[in-house]
Image 1 (spheres, rainbow, N blue to C red):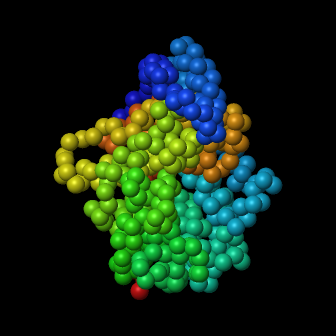
Image 2: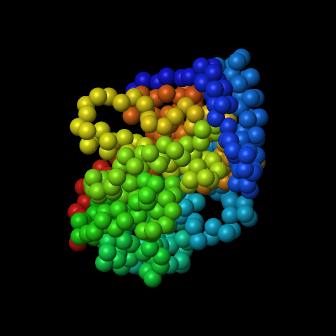
Length: 408
């Protein structure tokens, strides 16, 4: 792996973006006023960055230490504002643990044991994980719990998962058409298929009969724009689109979708001036879509290379990875730690996780080379684009679970 750091060179590239400001074509709306407001706040930050970059080639700098402090604080004690996420506690574990891994922080044995013990209390008799101890099983916290345990990467963590019961739980939420309910009697959307596939393949409980017709159901969710909606007939959305294309890739049935139409939709979600991604057409930039949109490009480019049987080494993403890094590092870092949606928004661990994941994707190019905006100190651990956990953690978990027999 080679690493290239880019300093003041990027300042000149970014300045050309001033010609990319939003044009409301003489028709002011609530949406256009919000877009203009966001651009002005970002313009101030960019101008300050340009001045710093002229004298310091290490700019922009990832505030690694303050982010670590913020995350470690939240690992032990959450502010009262997180009370509304009482039914999402495995997610809190995942967002924090995964962020720490990306920042190269080693979670000690005692901390890892506490997290694994807590998640064991979230696993129910039916094999699924609930949003907290005593809460009903749900595919979303099941995915978050498994990702957390794989991120911890210890036999103690892996052994929390009751693989036989987990597979039986997945059968209870599977639908005849190949879709999955998020919980027994709950809503159906593409998150369900993705979450079920992800935990199945990570823990080696996958079987083809469990996902019969799943790919065909996902294809029904691809819209005229090229992205994917949560269910057939709805609007394309970054989070759902990621779940859909990741699931198709895990199923090895990407040939069923129109991948070039998806690529067209995805590249147009990167904002021309800001450099970050929006979640849907005509929406504002948001740091979390750095992964939900940016994380699709390793999958899409892999599909295109496979379909064209090319052996040519590709060394760039099909989005502007430098612009995304600039948006994240200049506009999304809270000075006291944590990352944010956009300037003026509050920090939280959700945006910290997915914005860092997007930064990791942007830094790690398809060839394996790293191109880091600013100092090489900014470089994060690479993430596996299909699971969004550390690449080495995926390999370690699969090595562990593949030694075990697949449950019936």
